Amino acid sequence: MKGWFRLKKVVSREEALSHLKEGQTIMIGGFLAVGTPETLVDGIIEKRIGNLTVINNDTAFVDKGTGKLVVNKLIKKFIGSHIGTNPETGKQMNAGEIEVELIPQGTLAERIRSAGVGFGGFLTPTGLGTVVEKGKQKIEIDGKTYLLELPLRAEVALLKAAKADEFGNLIYRRLARNFNPMMAMAADLVIVEADEIVPTGSLDPDEIVTPGIFVDMIVKG
Image 1 (spheres, rainbow, N blue to C red):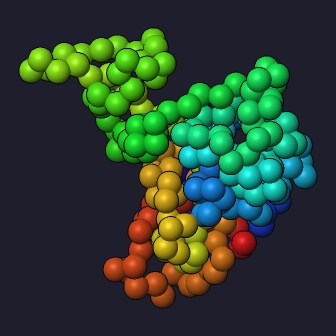
Image 2 (image 1 turned 180 degrees about the vertical axis):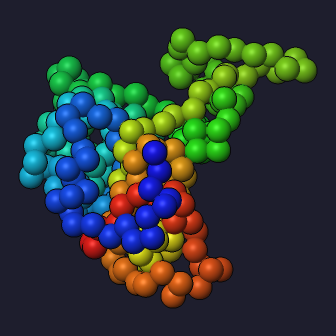
């Protein structure tokens, strides 16, 4: 159940991390670690919360972002669009230590968005004739063939914002916005690490990207 009824959602990192459990499916914002909540990722490593299925655009680098979870062998399965910038991911994949599901980046974004807005899926020609189509339903419309891609949802989303008010209205900084807004709508529990936390009502409504209705907890980054 979403925490929309809580007017103040600021909690300690310890309290936020107490909701993360072994074996969960977790979305993590970020693109090559830009827009990734590093404080929360470090907390997962400190608590050794493992056997995770992680949804993120990429596995960043060995010392940044989701890549740190790979290095510490806390990920059972990774779902994202590429792993090329983190050689440790490829090494573990080839050794059978981690399962990797690669999804075209646009498809990944749209699958997450579909979960957030309540779509049952969408049709795309992307991936036809490649390994991407394996096991997926094909639908023909007006003589053209499409793959049916299903929504992608998580139990928890860990996000990064530049600024949040106490209700959880969020502002992102430039490219750090990336996957964070759509992930905020596609998880049962949404935890945000914010660089700055301000009183509710002090943000310019025109600058708010993610409304606080989607946010359950806020941690000072």
